Image (cartoon, rainbow, N blue to C red):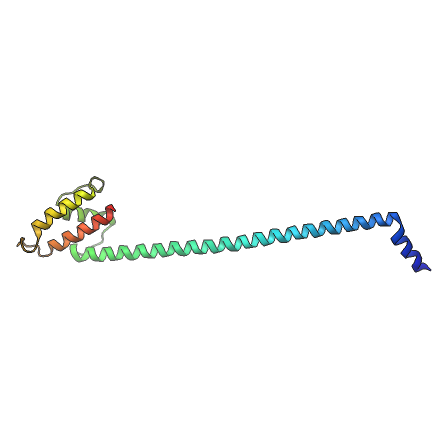
Length: 156
């Protein structure tokens, strides 16, 4: 009998139904909120993973470019030392030496154009060609060729 009374008051009492709706609404709101938290965390965590992946990729590319540039500088230094002697040379020293070698005068890099380089190379190649030139510098023609190639690449 008590059990019947509890069931009747619980399910048929309008006040209890209001409380039940309130409970249901609270549970729905909690479910919606938990779903929003889940979606936010999923987006946030996947965003962090994607950002971390992109950062790793970016750092890898920066490191790769740095290593390639260092290897190019080292190769450039070695070729320069073969032609112009030992020593520690900066990039500006290398450019100045190549300009001095090709133009036989100290010019500014910004003043020189590709056509100037080509014209001067033809002039110097005729002057220092091994068939024509019988001077002291045996490898002058080779150094003129390398200076010509270097300056063309610099202006490209």
